[in-house]
Length: 243
Image (cartoon, rainbow, N blue to C red; front, side, top):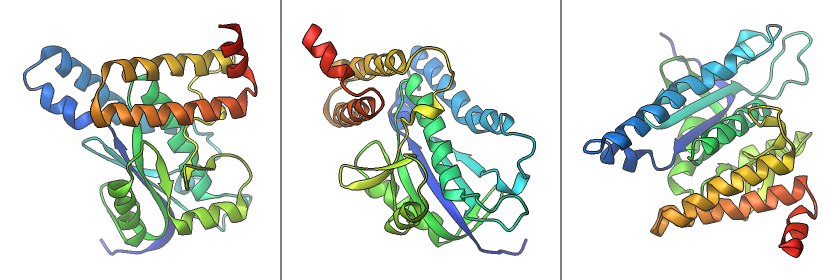
């Protein structure tokens, strides 16, 4: 098959804690069951999201994905000449997918970490090659926090056409806003109820983990509190005052 580069938005996503779980599962039946559950989520998350895409969306505009062990690779064309889709943004579509995945994995007790770039790649259902992929992968290896960091190039492209908070400036980086309220897995309950549930999940991890894994959940707690305040101004202050 001939390699043909095209301009695409690319994300390399790693599920944190998967490696430790895989090691523990070799000798612990409970951990093995947990590993099987996470693996099912890894394999099913994107196909399930794809099934929810409106049938009017052309197939070539839906992100391609690969899943390798605990990693998900996503990409979508940056733009299209298809009639009726002049406002399409592949970068925003990839960012949306990241938010959808962040919510689903957080509910299962896992954080995501990775990198995002835009540029030339060749992406098929079983392989991806190109500078944008290599950059996204490099960002993941150097990113020390549970976030999806945009490259300088991707951040510039986003800021030039931003229409919402699907990416934000946080902790000296432009990151995918994985906690965007538009992408909660279901529509039941208020924002307050949903964010409080997330706070319970995060605090339980902080209370049981140690060392670097605990630090990552601590970092995520600060981000969660920040985003909670953006959606529900004054709510957490009211909770503290009434405690």
